Image (cartoon, rainbow, N blue to C red):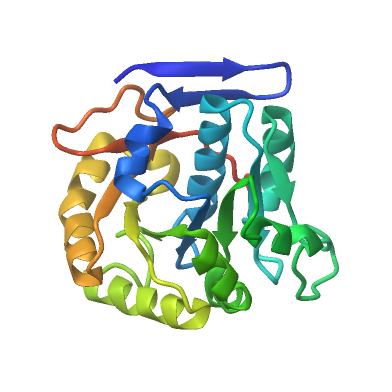
Length: 248
């Protein structure tokens, strides 16, 4: 696999050197890509990296990353605001994100991303059940524009360690959002201790999850800094940069 290194004075990003059209064959080519999953699945990293990647491949495009998380958890897309802005991705962030004010809120410009005449390519980071409920308010508009909805799973996280548990959680998110997941992302990781063996060991789980959920496995993501140049025959791999804030 070849890579493209994008750098400026504010951020360095290592991206897979393949076209969006190729990955679109895996996840679908719509203007809206929603990334959802259980808390701790790493969906925020997936959402931010996909947005950065798309913008790098299409520098003239209007690209937005929306944080649809109506509470203040530890990790959220707002943490990557500087990286997103430096790369030319417009962050659409709730007004009280990363503040001491814990009031449920949505960014006021969110609705504009779901207009039928939008030219913006949007990546939506959905934070848990609460975020899915909030997103459900826009379900009719989202369906009219067209969307992908990627369900992020990890075999190393509680409550999704078994494929049937992951499938049940997906159905809860679908019910809350009034939208259907269209693809699955395997983001199985144990943080800085992750080796290629952990990634390989997660693949049977990922394929079983996809079967249990009734959706295709789109790709397996991993941190390029930990496993540079990782290749697994027959698997679609997406190398990422870790964009979440470090708590310790």
